Image (cartoon, rainbow, N blue to C red; front, side):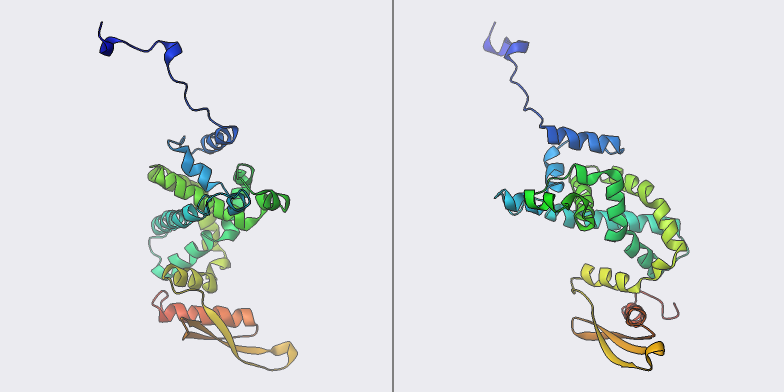
Length: 257
């Protein structure tokens, strides 16, 4: 028998790398929520690591969820865009944008992350953990998006989109029937950030009238250029009006909307 004919006996087989308890928890979390079993667990471990853990543990500044959050944000927006596009075939682009801007907001994502128990499988630095980091909406929303980025890199894009559509379909309907979809400020902020223009800036031009009947005039600027002027009985109302006009100026809303 030559050396090439020899086979390893079971006791000679090199032992597989042991799976940590945390990794087992992550796998169980994914499977229990109808997501695929990981092929490359490292993506998910990074996605569920808060920046405080890498900072306080003196690890690489890149060894946390921030880069995957960036990627997952794009996955989320694409999935929600497809969902609202299919669900509302007669809506114009502006209406679809308004609905999406609410659905992908932290205010919507964080409660879902709580419902899923995401904070229980996330890893935080000691100080952040003591301060309730596992329950902070911003941490949970970021972790949720980072998880989507991990699923995408692990080759589960179609499965992720299908999962998100099932998870969010009722939310989309609720937003469509609720006035919160008319959050023009949120829609404008999403648009400007997506274009790399930074945050819109609001400035009060005038404020007049008696205390019980005030009137405000407010402008909104993008990259220092005034894009809209709004009026209202409160600053919030005037800002919404200005943001709506800016979206119309940018071609994101029909002028008659």
